[in-house]
Length: 258
Ligand SMILES: [Zn+2]
Ligand SMILES: [Zn+2]
Image 1 (cartoon, rainbow, N blue to C red):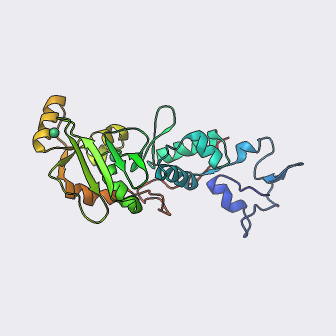
Image 2: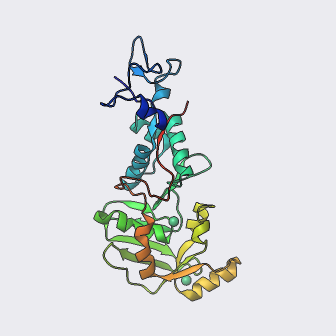
Image 3: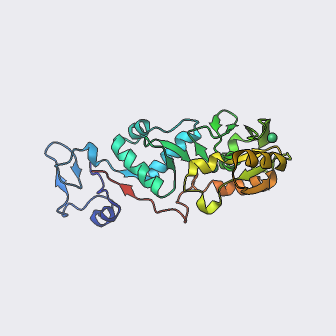
Protein backbone atom coordinates (compact mmCIF):
# COMPACT_ATOMS: atom_id res chain seq x y z
CA UNK A 1 0.00 0.00 0.00
CA UNK A 2 1.23 3.43 -0.91
CA UNK A 3 0.27 6.60 0.87
CA UNK A 4 0.61 9.94 -0.89
CA UNK A 5 3.42 12.31 -0.19
CA UNK A 6 1.60 14.86 1.73
CA UNK A 7 2.40 18.50 1.21
CA UNK A 8 0.60 20.09 -1.69
CA UNK A 9 3.78 20.96 -3.52
CA UNK A 10 5.32 17.54 -2.97
CA UNK A 11 2.34 15.33 -3.65
CA UNK A 12 2.08 15.83 -7.37
CA UNK A 13 5.75 15.92 -8.22
CA UNK A 14 6.48 12.59 -6.54
CA UNK A 15 3.50 10.75 -7.97
CA UNK A 16 3.50 8.62 -11.10
CA UNK A 17 0.76 8.83 -13.70
CA UNK A 18 -1.35 6.30 -11.84
CA UNK A 19 -1.12 8.30 -8.64
CA UNK A 20 1.47 6.16 -6.83
CA UNK A 21 4.66 7.79 -5.57
CA UNK A 22 7.66 7.30 -7.80
CA UNK A 23 9.79 4.49 -6.30
CA UNK A 24 12.83 6.21 -7.74
CA UNK A 25 12.25 9.25 -5.59
CA UNK A 26 14.76 9.14 -2.82
CA UNK A 27 12.21 10.48 -0.34
CA UNK A 28 10.23 7.25 -0.70
CA UNK A 29 11.40 4.54 1.66
CA UNK A 30 10.14 1.04 2.22
CA UNK A 31 9.17 -0.06 5.67
CA UNK A 32 10.54 -3.49 6.55
CA UNK A 33 7.24 -4.78 7.88
CA UNK A 34 4.67 -2.35 6.62
CA UNK A 35 3.54 -0.03 3.89
CA UNK A 36 5.71 2.44 2.02
CA UNK A 37 5.46 6.10 2.88
CA UNK A 38 6.60 9.26 1.23
CA UNK A 39 8.69 10.36 4.19
CA UNK A 40 11.55 9.09 6.24
CA UNK A 41 10.73 6.13 8.45
CA UNK A 42 11.65 8.13 11.50
CA UNK A 43 8.02 9.24 11.68
CA UNK A 44 5.33 6.88 12.86
CA UNK A 45 2.70 5.75 10.34
CA UNK A 46 -0.04 7.57 12.29
CA UNK A 47 1.75 10.89 11.98
CA UNK A 48 2.00 10.41 8.24
CA UNK A 49 -1.72 10.15 7.63
CA UNK A 50 -2.27 13.53 6.16
CA UNK A 51 -5.52 15.45 6.07
CA UNK A 52 -6.78 16.83 2.79
CA UNK A 53 -8.44 20.04 3.89
CA UNK A 54 -11.19 19.76 1.28
CA UNK A 55 -12.02 16.26 2.58
CA UNK A 56 -11.94 17.65 6.10
CA UNK A 57 -14.17 20.59 5.20
CA UNK A 58 -16.70 18.26 3.62
CA UNK A 59 -16.57 15.96 6.66
CA UNK A 60 -17.31 18.94 8.89
CA UNK A 61 -20.29 19.92 6.76
CA UNK A 62 -21.56 16.35 6.55
CA UNK A 63 -21.66 16.09 10.35
CA UNK A 64 -23.38 19.45 10.64
CA UNK A 65 -25.85 18.38 7.95
CA UNK A 66 -26.78 15.35 10.03
CA UNK A 67 -27.45 17.62 13.00
CA UNK A 68 -24.23 16.64 14.79
CA UNK A 69 -21.54 18.95 16.12
CA UNK A 70 -18.28 17.92 14.45
CA UNK A 71 -15.68 17.19 17.13
CA UNK A 72 -11.97 16.81 16.52
CA UNK A 73 -11.89 13.26 17.89
CA UNK A 74 -14.81 12.00 15.81
CA UNK A 75 -13.51 13.70 12.68
CA UNK A 76 -10.14 12.03 13.25
CA UNK A 77 -11.60 8.57 13.69
CA UNK A 78 -13.91 9.07 10.71
CA UNK A 79 -10.97 10.05 8.51
CA UNK A 80 -8.58 7.42 9.92
CA UNK A 81 -6.14 10.04 11.08
CA UNK A 82 -5.00 11.63 14.30
CA UNK A 83 -6.62 14.47 16.27
CA UNK A 84 -3.39 16.44 15.76
CA UNK A 85 -3.72 16.19 11.99
CA UNK A 86 -7.37 17.20 12.16
CA UNK A 87 -6.57 20.15 14.41
CA UNK A 88 -3.89 21.30 11.97
CA UNK A 89 -6.34 20.95 9.10
CA UNK A 90 -9.01 22.89 10.98
CA UNK A 91 -6.53 25.66 11.75
CA UNK A 92 -5.76 25.91 8.05
CA UNK A 93 -9.46 26.06 7.18
CA UNK A 94 -10.00 28.72 9.83
CA UNK A 95 -7.12 30.77 8.42
CA UNK A 96 -8.88 30.61 5.06
CA UNK A 97 -12.18 31.66 6.68
CA UNK A 98 -13.85 28.39 5.80
CA UNK A 99 -14.84 27.99 9.45
CA UNK A 100 -14.32 29.53 12.88
CA UNK A 101 -12.66 27.85 15.86
CA UNK A 102 -13.13 28.42 19.57
CA UNK A 103 -10.31 28.99 22.01
CA UNK A 104 -10.16 25.24 22.69
CA UNK A 105 -9.59 24.55 18.97
CA UNK A 106 -13.06 23.10 18.51
CA UNK A 107 -15.32 24.14 15.67
CA UNK A 108 -17.59 27.05 16.52
CA UNK A 109 -19.02 27.85 13.10
CA UNK A 110 -18.94 26.60 9.52
CA UNK A 111 -21.38 28.93 7.84
CA UNK A 112 -24.28 28.66 7.82
CA UNK A 113 -23.95 26.03 10.56
CA UNK A 114 -22.97 26.81 14.12
CA UNK A 115 -22.05 24.66 17.09
CA UNK A 116 -23.09 27.33 19.59
CA UNK A 117 -26.44 29.08 20.21
CA UNK A 118 -26.59 32.57 18.69
CA UNK A 119 -30.26 33.39 19.14
CA UNK A 120 -31.92 31.17 16.52
CA UNK A 121 -33.11 27.60 16.17
CA UNK A 122 -33.94 25.95 12.85
CA UNK A 123 -36.10 22.84 12.64
CA UNK A 124 -36.16 20.82 9.43
CA UNK A 125 -38.19 17.72 8.58
CA UNK A 126 -36.10 15.40 10.75
CA UNK A 127 -33.26 17.49 12.23
CA UNK A 128 -32.81 20.47 14.50
CA UNK A 129 -29.96 22.98 14.32
CA UNK A 130 -28.73 26.07 16.08
CA UNK A 131 -29.45 28.72 13.51
CA UNK A 132 -26.38 30.92 13.67
CA UNK A 133 -27.37 34.49 12.83
CA UNK A 134 -30.45 35.69 10.96
CA UNK A 135 -28.57 35.33 7.68
CA UNK A 136 -27.36 31.81 8.49
CA UNK A 137 -30.79 30.71 9.68
CA UNK A 138 -32.42 31.82 6.45
CA UNK A 139 -29.55 30.22 4.49
CA UNK A 140 -30.13 26.71 5.83
CA UNK A 141 -33.33 26.09 3.80
CA UNK A 142 -31.39 27.14 0.69
CA UNK A 143 -28.52 24.81 1.53
CA UNK A 144 -30.74 21.87 2.52
CA UNK A 145 -33.94 22.27 0.46
CA UNK A 146 -34.94 18.66 1.13
CA UNK A 147 -35.40 19.69 4.79
CA UNK A 148 -37.57 22.68 3.90
CA UNK A 149 -39.81 24.28 4.81
CA UNK A 150 -37.85 24.89 7.98
CA UNK A 151 -39.19 26.51 11.12
CA UNK A 152 -36.85 29.40 11.99
CA UNK A 153 -37.44 30.70 15.52
CA UNK A 154 -35.95 33.50 17.60
CA UNK A 155 -36.82 36.26 20.05
CA UNK A 156 -36.58 40.01 19.52
CA UNK A 157 -33.41 41.22 21.30
CA UNK A 158 -35.23 44.41 22.39
CA UNK A 159 -38.51 43.11 23.84
CA UNK A 160 -38.08 39.29 23.84
CA UNK A 161 -41.18 38.80 21.69
CA UNK A 162 -41.03 35.31 20.17
CA UNK A 163 -41.02 35.05 16.36
CA UNK A 164 -41.10 32.09 13.98
CA UNK A 165 -41.32 31.67 10.22
CA UNK A 166 -41.68 28.80 7.80
CA UNK A 167 -38.73 29.31 5.42
CA UNK A 168 -38.04 27.50 2.16
CA UNK A 169 -36.01 28.21 -0.97
CA UNK A 170 -38.99 29.22 -3.13
CA UNK A 171 -40.34 32.50 -1.74
CA UNK A 172 -39.67 34.88 1.15
CA UNK A 173 -41.43 34.13 4.44
CA UNK A 174 -44.34 36.32 5.50
CA UNK A 175 -43.58 38.89 8.20
CA UNK A 176 -43.17 42.59 8.94
CA UNK A 177 -40.11 42.10 11.14
CA UNK A 178 -36.73 43.57 10.22
CA UNK A 179 -33.18 42.22 10.38
CA UNK A 180 -30.40 44.36 11.84
CA UNK A 181 -26.74 43.65 11.02
CA UNK A 182 -24.60 45.51 13.55
CA UNK A 183 -21.14 44.84 12.05
CA UNK A 184 -20.27 46.06 8.53
CA UNK A 185 -19.53 43.26 6.07
CA UNK A 186 -15.93 44.39 5.68
CA UNK A 187 -15.36 43.81 9.42
CA UNK A 188 -17.39 40.65 9.90
CA UNK A 189 -14.36 38.33 10.21
CA UNK A 190 -12.68 40.49 12.86
CA UNK A 191 -14.74 38.43 15.34
CA UNK A 192 -17.18 36.37 13.35
CA UNK A 193 -18.97 34.92 16.38
CA UNK A 194 -19.63 38.44 17.71
CA UNK A 195 -20.74 39.46 14.21
CA UNK A 196 -23.20 36.59 13.87
CA UNK A 197 -24.51 36.99 17.40
CA UNK A 198 -25.45 40.56 16.42
CA UNK A 199 -27.23 39.78 13.18
CA UNK A 200 -30.70 39.46 14.66
CA UNK A 201 -34.34 39.91 13.75
CA UNK A 202 -36.42 42.51 15.60
CA UNK A 203 -40.17 43.16 15.76
CA UNK A 204 -39.75 46.48 13.95
CA UNK A 205 -37.50 49.49 13.45
CA UNK A 206 -38.81 50.74 16.80
CA UNK A 207 -37.35 47.72 18.57
CA UNK A 208 -34.04 48.14 16.70
CA UNK A 209 -33.81 51.73 17.92
CA UNK A 210 -34.75 50.74 21.48
CA UNK A 211 -32.06 48.03 21.54
CA UNK A 212 -29.41 50.38 20.13
CA UNK A 213 -30.29 53.06 22.71
CA UNK A 214 -30.10 50.52 25.50
CA UNK A 215 -26.86 48.89 24.34
CA UNK A 216 -25.13 52.10 23.31
CA UNK A 217 -24.22 50.65 19.93
CA UNK A 218 -24.29 52.42 16.60
CA UNK A 219 -26.94 51.52 14.07
CA UNK A 220 -25.84 49.03 11.42
CA UNK A 221 -27.75 47.86 8.36
CA UNK A 222 -31.51 47.24 8.56
CA UNK A 223 -33.40 45.19 5.98
CA UNK A 224 -36.83 43.62 5.62
CA UNK A 225 -37.36 39.85 5.58
CA UNK A 226 -37.64 39.50 1.77
CA UNK A 227 -34.24 41.21 1.43
CA UNK A 228 -32.74 38.93 4.07
CA UNK A 229 -34.20 35.89 2.32
CA UNK A 230 -32.78 36.98 -1.05
CA UNK A 231 -29.36 37.46 0.58
CA UNK A 232 -29.53 34.02 2.19
CA UNK A 233 -28.06 31.92 -0.66
CA UNK A 234 -24.96 34.13 -0.51
CA UNK A 235 -24.53 32.83 3.04
CA UNK A 236 -23.85 29.33 1.75
CA UNK A 237 -20.56 29.70 -0.15
CA UNK A 238 -19.02 26.54 1.22
CA UNK A 239 -21.85 24.06 1.44
CA UNK A 240 -21.47 20.29 1.47
CA UNK A 241 -22.20 19.97 -2.22
CA UNK A 242 -19.69 22.62 -3.25
CA UNK A 243 -16.95 20.92 -5.21
CA UNK A 244 -14.53 23.79 -4.97
CA UNK A 245 -13.81 26.52 -2.51
CA UNK A 246 -15.21 30.00 -2.90
CA UNK A 247 -12.90 32.16 -4.95
CA UNK A 248 -12.60 34.70 -2.16
CA UNK A 249 -11.30 32.11 0.25
CA UNK A 250 -7.82 30.70 0.65
CA UNK A 251 -6.98 27.65 -1.50
CA UNK A 252 -7.46 24.24 0.06
CA UNK A 253 -4.52 21.90 0.37
CA UNK A 254 -3.31 18.79 2.01
CA UNK A 255 -2.07 19.29 5.55
CA UNK A 256 0.64 17.29 7.26
CA UNK A 257 1.41 18.11 10.82
CA UNK A 258 4.72 16.62 11.92
ZN1 LIG B 1 -39.38 43.62 19.82
ZN1 LIG C 1 -23.83 34.43 10.60
